[in-house]
Amino acid sequence: MKKLLFIVLILLFSGLGWYLFIKKYDYEFQMQLKYGPGVSYFEVSDWKNFSSTSKKTDINIVSRDPFNTITQKIEGGKTGDLELFWEFEKNNDSVTNVNLSVRSSKDQLANRWDIINPFVSSIYIDTLKQRMLGFKKRLNEVQQTYRVSLQNEITRSPDMNCICHSSTNIPVKSKAQEMLATIGFLENYVLERDIKLTGAPFVKITKWDRESDLIDFDFCFPVNLAQDIKPTPQIDFREMKSFTALKAVFNGNYRLSHLAWYDLLNKAEEQDLKTNALPLEIFYNNPKKEIESENWKTDVFLPIIK
Image 1 (cartoon, rainbow, N blue to C red):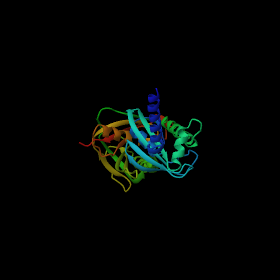
Image 2 (spheres, rainbow, N blue to C red):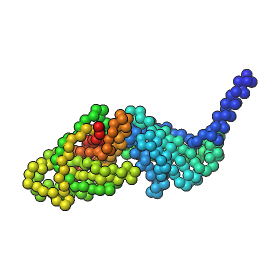
Image 3 (cartoon, rainbow, N blue to C red):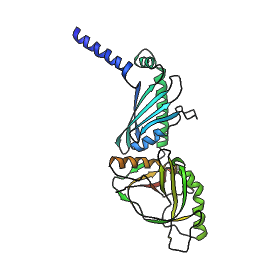
Image 4 (cartoon, one colour):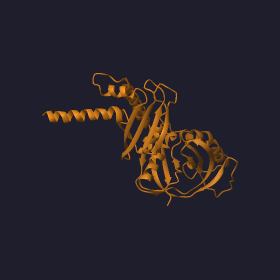
């Protein structure tokens, strides 16, 4: 009996010593997020304010392995700098398991002792829990406004002739705003020449700097180019050839349609498919006529390179 008690005490103190002095992180959170690792990875990367009431950007990305891990640093605070280490694991196309490990740079031993002490309330952990609950609540609210549905089979994009206006060095999140600012060039060209569209408007990404998240893209209206029309300084003609692609359907506001890109990139990586990471988006709803953006539909094609 004494021997068993001795072994239990050894294990107990060994575990306590490991946690207090060796374990890298102070505390871990587990959660599930909607959609695949691509969307989850982007949503976490886009989290800039540790406090929901603050407008100050205090969350900085230290390192990242796309769709797998993100390390963030939060500067200042009573507990010193915080390090957040996120790990993403796909459950299925609709759910991602997320593990978050946290550690502080200040009073680490005291913080860890408070965590395991049943007679003390840890302000450090209580604050972290409040922040994580706030983050999860805000993310849930945002994710109620859109849906991302991935198709399993490889498909082909449509073949289109079109008139296009080009934009450069646009933040990914400002794509829809840039479309709104430049759609007049396309609409006026069509109205002045009484041209009929042969399909839905679309955007073709022509360059994507994923480090800075800046894109170049063509905003296009499909038309029949076999008529007496000419390009202008603001309008070019394009022949959009069909290409092999992975496809997703995005339902929601067009300013968020880029979220589907990340799940498609993750799917291409999973299937060991090469891609140039230059998506095509086809928009089927007119925001000027249809107010309920949750019902807007976008077909998103990610080119597959053989």
